[in-house]
Image (cartoon, rainbow, N blue to C red):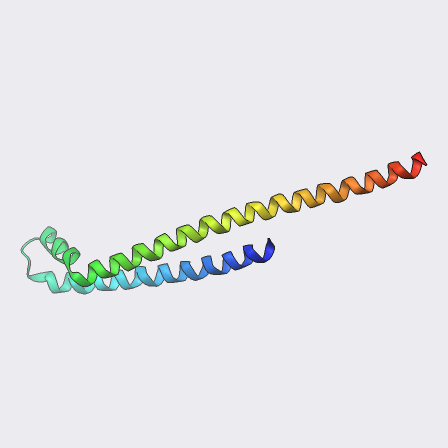
Length: 109
């Protein structure tokens, strides 16, 4: 369980890095698109033109995919972490019970 949790944690970290890179790419592309849209008459029109840029849309899709991947891996990691804690508690309980049973058997013979 510990190894699977570690593996999922590593994948989660990589997904977080990928999401941050996708966000940076999106922000950079939005800024470039906003500069290209300077000829629009109003700020609202500039923002709309920048948001409709095909490159911005592609980077938005890439960011959303990276975000979804991170969220799914986060869910897997949290589930594995909880399961590992349950296994650990159960092992501790059983090992502790074994000691009590051995003591009880010692005095009953």
